Length: 114
Length: 112
Image (cartoon, rainbow over all chains, first blue to last red; front, side, top):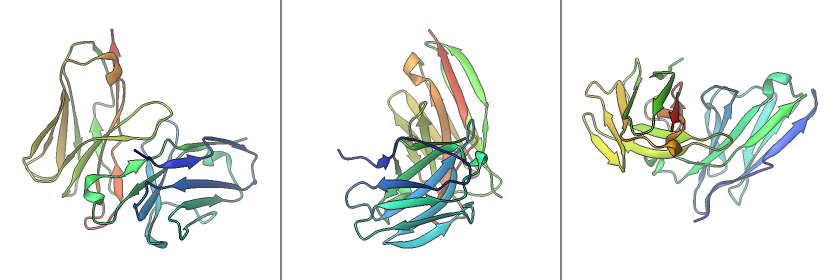
């Protein structure tokens, strides 16, 4: 069965650079969620989209933005990168109405800022 | 903000032993989920709970939705080396939203 696809798997950027992370949800899933997980930390909710509109917002810095496109894939854009942005970034997807059954997570993008 | 506290933080156990961990909150939750995360991978859903008092099993895993709706428990019986990982509880917060918050995690290591 198709899963949530994230790209790239690994990304190394320098401070003050920009990064774009991509997420392709499971086919038919209309909702995408982004989480950030620092080393040894639990996943922290950043932002979610339903039918291309932002639905919930968490602890997403102003330097980050995200959107969901007409094909339901989503991109997380990160600018003016800081060392503290180094983390695993997970995307998850679900079908609105089925979110009580939990999300399906992708394998994540490991971002290292040097 | 709301936090889900898990205990223990980490466990080292012998293969074949049973494991118990819990997750507590200061708020009421209507849904509890338990996820397992292996190194470098995304969390994978193990069990979902929807009713206070509910007891649900998935193979060697059993989870319970606490009566107060402020806690949940996960038990693993007869642990095996592949049970190694981080176990997270999760719940909708604030209630009625579509986003989940995650607990602080329990790191499990199984010694063969």
